[in-house]
Image (cartoon, rainbow, N blue to C red; front, side):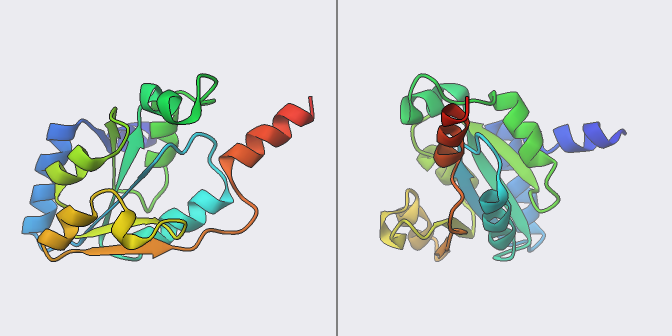
Length: 164
């Protein structure tokens, strides 16, 4: 298996991800779930995702599809297509699984995967995080992580536009 094969092997569809997560859970792993667009990867993303991984033994990333990103961010986004974003995310050593979701929120994906820990940025209140009810019902944890100041994809896109 090549390095690229090992990376792309971390990208799974929902049913494959359910099977893998179920196996990990049965083996005693703590499953952490987070999600996002991750359109232009920057230092803030790396910091956030590495801290998310510290919350358990396996980190599952729900990745918005291109259609989902367009609905959330507008017709000119994403800048980077979904397959490229998935490969970039899967290449990070602390991400164990990447799963696309096409809905506006990852609620159905969270319901399907049943993680132990749900993580989002501290710009959310824990009780407002999509999936909070699912985690609380199963006795899981919902946690927030502070962002690194000065890093956002939107500000990077704006900076690129103004420099042209």
